[in-house]
Structures are given as structure tokens and as C-alpha cells.
Length: 129
Length: 334
Image (cartoon, rainbow over all chains, first blue to last red):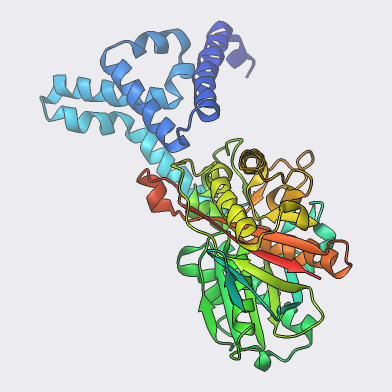
């Protein structure tokens, strides 16, 4: 355990926190200041991440901030684009259709699995405000 | 009974609001009008498996309570008008299926309660009925699920959005009695000013309330000062300000005696509901609880109740349609 903490790159943790936080801050501003619904903001984030990923720009952000860039929804879009591009190199044009989902299969399967577990063990509740 | 002006019905032998009842949810129980409810609930499910079932139970128990309080046997109630916000008015249909009273389902969104009271008064003003009943319900959780987002999504509500009241209100109207009397009924016209934001219903409905208010004053020749209180159904803080401003612009100063049920039912500083309350149960519970009590105690002698409704649904909102709105008014005097 002590070894684990000694090996943590604290600068990267800080960068990850700031970049991840900034991405979320933009989402919060969009909720508060525009009439965009949360569903649209979600789709826009994935699309925006895919475009930046496809153009190779998002990778700079990933290199800089690690999980701060890969965990938010834009990171999911980036993974979709990257997966599709890599699969085209490996399998040809069909890879453009299969690569995205292959690359993000872990995330999608985890979302389904944990969503199902959450539905089994919890009950919907009223919100506080 | 006669029509005055363009659209107002004046009852020459005004029917009496014999009895009312209302049940509220946990949030309403912490609001400023809590003590006027016949019963408040500890949780939103009330022992049921779904919010929809809970809402049906709330309207059923509210109607049972108004019948019990009135001491009129159920068999004497000749017609029942009821409606709610859920698709095809299932809260009313399911909740009142064992009532065994001729049932007329009505939909006026959050204006349904006053529509029901007006129709009850109309029926009682003719030879066809001595007693008619109206009831409406709404439930925060079932309404959010149907009109906005599933609660499980946990998304944030914008500041202009209103909080759907969980509860139901019911009134029993009789041909004769000691009052409070329903003296007039002004059914409103549909008004659509092009507002498309389902999280800003107050702004969409305020022009409809204005239209009905002006029609009522014009038809009856009354001025705002005739009433001790003018109460709109559920415009909330945003809509209330808009209506106050608009009515002044049209020459009716309602600032001294006007309030909104959506503003009254929750405490702005203690309960963060953003723009106040809404839903069929908003106007229904505020009238059945607080206002009826004040009329009985003669603290208010003349009130105008203007329930407002947004005639929209989830599909029309998703297709980018604007929100047609309506307001119905009844005057109640003692």
C-alpha cells in the first residue's frame, strides 16, 4: 500500500482533476445557461470527443491529463473514433463500423452490468430538489 | 343560470361547495399550508409498488374522505368529474373505478380542478343533479417521469422549473346549501404565445391566465378590487410576476390581492422548489385545504380562482412544439 502511494504521479493526479473538472464545468454551464437538455449535452459531448479524437487532437489532452480526459463522455467519443481508425488499418474499411464498438466494449458492457446490478439492489426515489 | 358577456356563466341560484378534502405528500407536509391538509403522507409510495399506483390511491382516498366528511351517502352523488396529468388520466380512472358514481373524465392539465368545479356547478344548477363531485391529483415522481426525465437519471432541474405537487383535492358541490357559493364560471380560451420550454410553464401559462382574467372582468363588469383574493393555479414565481406585469399593462391592477397557489404551497427559502409548485393537485389542494377553510371562517368572502393548464405532452415537447395554455376561472363567495 505504501509502495502504491509512493508510485502515484501526484502532478498527473492534479492535472487530471483540473481537466476533468473543467470538462464537467462546461457541462454545468450548458445546463444552467442554455435550454439544452441533459440528454443533448450528453450526445454533444460524445460527438465532440469523437471529432477531436478523429482529428488526433484529443490525444494531446489524454497525454496531458490521463483519466481526467478519458473518463468524461468526451473520452468515450475519443475511444470510439480511435477504435474505428485503428480497425480500418487492421481490417480494412469494415473496421470503420466494427472498431468503435470493439474499442469501447469494456465501457459499454460495464455500464450494462453495473446498471443492471443497481436496478436490482436499489429502488427509485424522489429527488431532494 | 345565464351567460353574461362573451363567455362567463353566472349562476342565479349559486350552488354550494358543500365539502372539500385534500391529501398531500411529504414535501407538502413541510410547506406553509401543511395544517390545512386532511392527511399528509410520510413517503411518496404510500405503501404501493409504483408512483402511479400511489397517485391513484391518493385520489381514491381523497374522494372517500370528502364523501365521509360531507355525511352525504355515496349513492346520492350523481356525477363525478375527474382528471389528472398521467396519460389517458389513469390516476382518476384507476383510482375511482370502485366509486360507483357516473364518471366524466376531463383533461385541462393543471386547470382541471376548476374545470371540474365549474362543470359540477353547472350540473347542480340544472334539474339533473343535486350533488356533483370533482377531484384531481398529481404526483411529482409520476409527472417528472412522464413529462421530463426518469428520476433515476438524476438530472438537475433548471431554475425556472416548478415542482409538481404530490397530492389530490376534491370538492363536493350541492344544489343548495349555506355556501361558500360558486357564483360564476368563466371557461377560458386556448392561448399560445410560442413558449417551447417545458421547464418554464409559468411563462407559457401567464398569458392564458391574463386572457381569462380580462374576459371575466369584462363579462361581469367587476374590477379586481371586487375580490378579497385572486388566486391563479400554478404560475409559480416566474409566471406570477409576468401576470402581475401584464395585467397592469392592460389596466387591471391586481398587485394588492393577487397570489398564486404554486407560490403559496411551498416555502421558497426553506424548500428549494425553484419556481414554486405546479400540477393538478396544486390548485386543488390549496383550494380544498387553505382557501376553503378561509372562506368558511369568512376571512375571505369573495375569491376568484383561476386555474391554469399547459396543454402539452411529452411527444409534442420532443417535436419542438410550443405550449398551448388555458385558464378557467370560478368566483366563490360567501
